[in-house]
Image: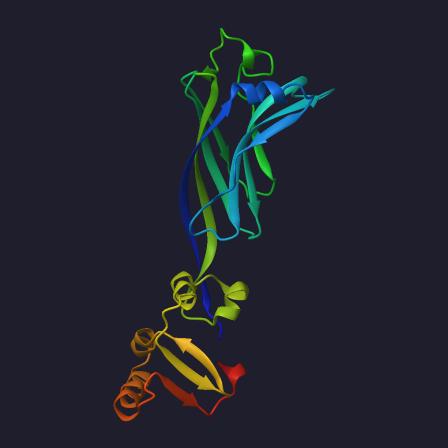
Length: 232
């Protein structure tokens, strides 16, 4: 079964606060290069996509933009889906009362985006006059909005075709539930469904199901003999 496609744009706001003890940063900073990452965070409605935040120290030589050991705050991505996505992001450091903004207007393809904070480097980080720490904890807040363009289904499709055609969100969620209360039996195999959904979509099936309920002791199943199992 095929379906027509509709292009839709959705926004997904997220917010993460990361706290790193000063002692951990001192230990890591003994290395030439290092990074500290958060756990992976997932966004409801974006399957197979996750993001993380963190801080990274990287050493540069003969680079047009950076020189020596530099610190970056990170917003990173892990994804299997090929979403058409852009994002805007604000990073706030409570200790300095400053906010810094990323705006990326192209498809996210890199594994992470790194932001250089003015005045924050491996030397100034531990300078007590700079006050980057709150009670010996380095804290930063990441507030981001992911804007996703994707195709959705204008009509019902079979689950096996969703990846080929489009994402039919409600149908897929219902299909994956475990509370189906009716079954079609084809070639001795059951295809379990929600009786209310089938009756709502098809008056003819509603009539057949209601007749089955009144005539048979095995009222939760209907055998189909006109088609084989693969035709479902």
